[in-house]
Image 1 (cartoon, rainbow, N blue to C red):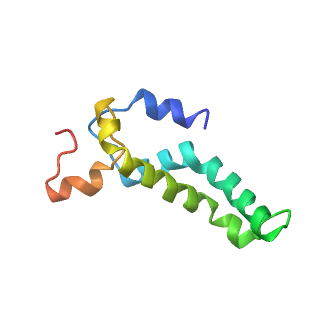
Image 2: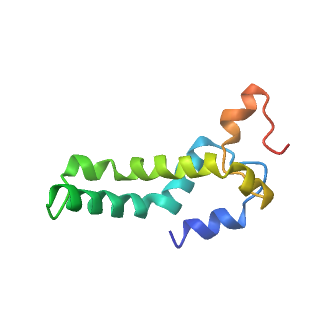
Length: 101
């Protein structure tokens, strides 16, 4: 988080992220740790065990990405008002969507 978040904030623009892999990296840096923490917390609350099973733990980063992608979509207009867009150009450009406008 300490490496990735400042990297993305310093390059934020209304142009969006260049590639889908950049979106994956962004989501990991801003929410990956949260996904790990929530997976363990929910497991402990619901199952009463100390550690989630490996299968569940292996999904924690995907869980975090889903949470962060929801936030990106929910906040797209607010982020734009602050000069940032976290959507990947690689997905939108082929369809004629210019993220800058």
